Image (cartoon, rainbow over all chains, first blue to last red):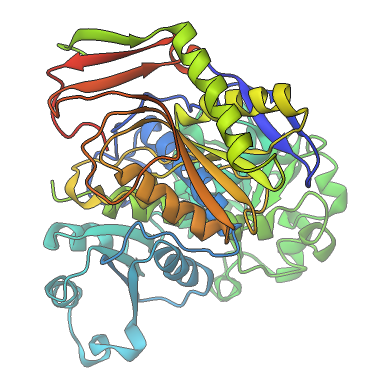
Length: 340
Length: 188
């Protein structure tokens, strides 16, 4: 095994530094295992070696984002259609840029400006998109399971960009990528997910993904926002935030949807912030060097205090960059090959 | 390489060492020194060869030449014809290629398609003054108008044969052999 890596600082002499396996990678040469399914609908049914492949590929993609010319010709002639039935800034922009950086053509369709307002069904909309020749359909939809329905009707690869409270697999993959890059691995890490677990597709995908990769996941939130069945997914359920944070390596804060207060799921925003908001004092319970993450958009001063959101533990902006790398990896893995 | 028989060994350890030494001398001679010179190895066996060339150049001239690593997967022209995609590994070129003389290094030159992809990849990183090509083995059968500036050994081959380069760093052994009856089209 070759074990020297080249490092060069400025124009000075090169330094050969010992490090394992960067040069050759850990897999054999040539064509290797790809993803087993044509779609990415959720992490529940994705195997650990597939997650590793996505994260490894994303690491290579991240180098491209750092270049002056952020473009490779890989997906020339492929078409990515982003269909968003719910508002989104970062996920949609991220998919759009990921497609552009790989030289694919991308088109955005949002429900409010499409034939959806004329009453067109999801099935008919997807048939239209398929007929226009899409290679990948990225779908966000308020109904859980909608991407699966589309995946069964179209030949194109379907990527779930968030469906109801079901899954948001690309967010969980970018979370895992961020943690793996900072901590060197995921195994045996203590991950705390805090907030509205009930309505959070991010939490569900994070629980599937992190536990599959060997991390220990605790979830915490008001009891009205903890759905049943979390233990079966492999998570440790806690109602006290301090217990969840104690010794945590990673803290994932979820956005509290303020409209939920009207549904009576928590008494007041101030009380929620006091019990389940992350501030400097609570952060001190976590391991030194713990990472603070948030899928965005943040309610500053509610689930996360500004000093923590902008503090040294926060990797929230890095998550956005890494999201781009992960989505490039997925587009390559799902659309890069020929027809099977 | 299952079901493949070795036909002939064409280079041994010493042969490879001598070829690398000669190419290092030729690079220095052709470029009149090492000013603005940089080596870029193509994954995977071009990388140890580039490092060895840099070592030789250091021995001869006493100057350090920066070495980069190029992964050309994203630039391949056959992605659309393969059922599964090859693994994308990282490109690591930790210096600016602008205005440099870049020597691209690979083990075997065959159709020229890998080099075409590598040229596109380098040009995406910036604008070198000059790009040259060094290969350990040139086996012919070019499909593009590309030639090497430095060649370790020219080996006439049949299209049905494959040339296998094994290097200590990547394979634990050190030789070059011609193999028979490899599936066609297995090498880019």
